[in-house]
Image (cartoon, rainbow, N blue to C red; front, side):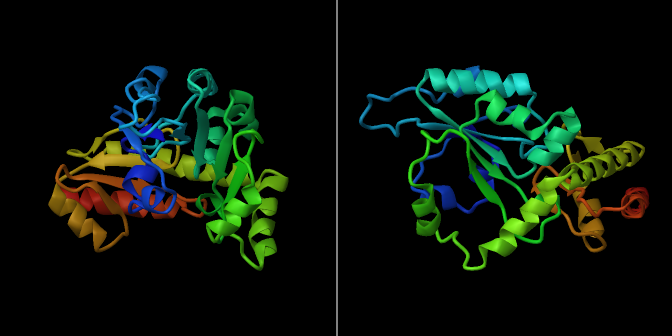
Length: 264
């Protein structure tokens, strides 16, 4: 499976795709978390080489692990390029709703209309208590999905309680309202952070994530007051996420605390 070096499946799953899924991740460095046809070609070779894992799938994330967003045209170009090589395309859609809200397009524009073969659709990142969905768009790409679900221990005996949450999100526009709100809170956070001298925003804020670089000691003091992660502790890079239930007061309190700690 070809993916960005920064992809969630590579950096945040403790090796599960390789250990549990039996996949070899073929990673590509990217400046913004997004693959391109040219970047795919860095790993799209060696199908006849018995010493190399054969590339079978391209996996992209929308939004990416760095909070950036693919346009529908970019996804379509990736799918066409991967399919021309005989590969399938998987879309990690943990924050697909946020990307659709940013681009103001229907979910289908970023998935089946763009040529994606299989999609992991996020629920918990957009308001569900638990549960995600695997959506097989290209029925020829995945066989015996029910058996694979059972084999990977993902068939819950009370599956209806998982499914009803996704139904509530998708039946009307709750998924979109939640995503728009978290995106708006990220923009509010970014605007407040830019006013803090000595803090650098690292990537375009296109979904509900803000990546920043600031003094290490400031982050450590802030972590005693707010919960967030170091993205690259050595460089002082951090990741701040906004959620469907983040309030303006939450954001303003964090920005005020940040400015206070920077002033120290």
